[in-house]
Length: 138
Ligand SMILES: [Zn+2]
Image (cartoon, rainbow, N blue to C red; front, side, top):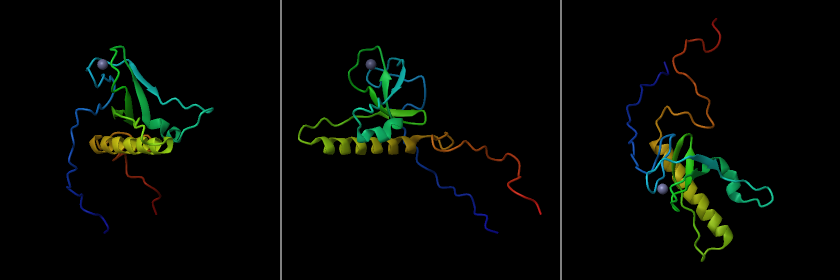
């Protein structure tokens, strides 16, 4: 028997007010309803390392006029504000690297607060407990 006991370890749920679990989204700055999300614009003529992360960088469309909080990191349907570095003491490569780090941090936050059963982009939604036919019977 290799059946392991179900672990009862509780994953602490960090409830961050900055994380929004799904549409409809609201402006993080003023709380007004947002119009929707638009993805990171990949420009083939001007490639950027951040293009690799395009699936996770989105912008809130808003008509509230706020100038901050418009860029978000997205994991599944969860989003959280994503601040990019415009530190002029860094060169371009360093800023890109800083931005990737910021994005990874934001995605780590999102994955920590996401409901465990939320579908992830790279995982097919498997329904547990649907029948017991997982192969062949002798
Ligand atoms: Zn706003």
